[in-house]
Image 1 (cartoon, rainbow, N blue to C red):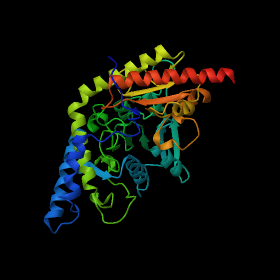
Image 2 (image 1 turned 135 degrees about the horizontal axis):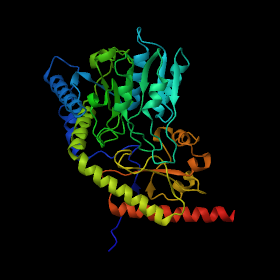
Image 3 (image 1 turned 120 degrees about the horizontal axis):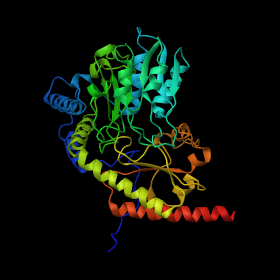
Image 4 (image 1 turned 120 degrees about the vertical axis):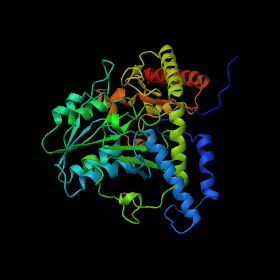
Length: 399
């Protein structure tokens, strides 16, 4: 018996995730019952809100191997990245004006670096491994070592890529700069809750992440700020009430923070089992696509737990335009790249950095398998993609 599938099928979990009902349940009282401002120090409503925020801070910090005093709440990973990069470079005293990062970073890192490049900073973007060879998108730590100069003050490397799911060897990269005053920042937005993340083991000084990638609410994120190597002396980017230790002013989003903590707690409790299940569904999808579609190409590293996020699959379908493919199968929710760049008609900078041609880049789709997907949905999606590719290739051959 074929299991019925409710459409549309959501396979864009790198863009955002559905809020887990258990997370929503934890948040609801802080909209209607415990609605105080965490900054109100003169009455019980404020005290209760502040206690909830500090409990959430402790929960999230413990999950990443940090102290709660090292966690700053923000509006999301984009703000966290900006606070980390611009806050570190705006300090009056710094090591130098050279920054090292990677060509495949998210725009929330690349765009602030571009802005810094228009000032007195020099930015070096490192190349990654090409798409052939099974390690596409991986950064060799030796490249970081070779790029370091006497005036290098910051290195920023994404832990898990949002388009191709590649996992970087961050602890090895940290070893390349250990003993220096160089700060190491990582955008760990896609990694938290998906893989084991420990800031001490990774050796990072600054780490950005967000709630809505791990079944929490949108509009809330975090920045780990080490007290070592003067990383804690970030220059604030938002001035006002002096919240978050003076690093990030603004009224704390209490329901969001509570949901953030609950989402992290659940992700950590279920991470091992969920990774195995999601990884199995991802592999099932790729196998089904290869059966149904000729010449489908895997983009990024091999489908292994050591190299790639369990729920990530990025494929190119030669002779088909990815945008046309998405438009022809409205029952499937996927993307052709980062949600933050979906309004940009340019081909994915991540895939181009892997050496893909513009045609192959434009022929790509990103599938994000998540917590609420089922095997029936995976099979349904593979059938729809296969049918759509065949139809579009036939139309192309007749034109």
